[in-house]
Image 1 (cartoon, rainbow, N blue to C red):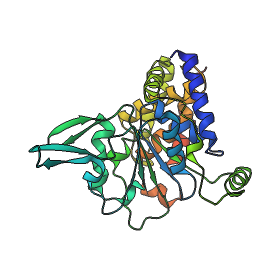
Image 2 (spheres, one colour; image 1 turned 45 degrees about the vertical axis):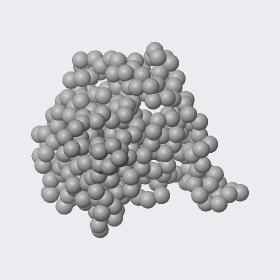
Image 3 (cartoon, rainbow, N blue to C red; image 1 turned 90 degrees about the horizontal axis):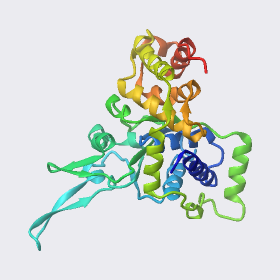
Length: 319
């Protein structure tokens, strides 16, 4: 695919997703950023905002293999990765693959499971392989984890450690729909039918897994001017020097910001990254990678407030 074909395919994919997801335009763009960047996405929001629907719709539209794991306190790493078992008939060990052997893995309520189970995803998220009994097995391509968590309910949950949060390319905070959007959703899902949600089967496949890989390759070819690159790095480095943050973003955050800005540029039909794409992705890429100081927490501020201050302070290059 060339640039124009890639952009057109993305528009077709987005239009198909909008048949299932009403509103949430920015959320859809950012989920597509994760897909095009070959990154992982953390979706945070109260129940009932369509987090799972977005993931299921995406899986349907690109025709890849889809697995869902409901994270619970008793979930074991082998329930995600799989295990080896001994076959008496052949006297050999065989691999029973877990749900992580897929293209799109929905880790539902990922903070419901303890650290040992959460950590089972670290290797496959970063290295695209799964090691069982000393032998490594490659994951499918493309591979993407979309995890959900409820920010309100803390009882019986386990906060994701910084090392795992850093593996997520972006974190998306879902908000309530507007009045008009909620009216449309209510009309769509209650007229002449039981309240069973949107029929994902009605969506058509727009892309194949191989075409998704082509789009990811096209994303990597988006141009980034040296001045824009310098701007992105300065934004990230400023998080390490801000007095209101206990720790700043890592080098992986710099790479993630640039790659996600490339993907957003492609979605917008641009063959280059502008400072606007860097600004648009900064909150989603950096917010989950920073530690807010106790002083600012007491004052009622959050990481987003600090990031907005940094974005306003760091001078962007003129376009």
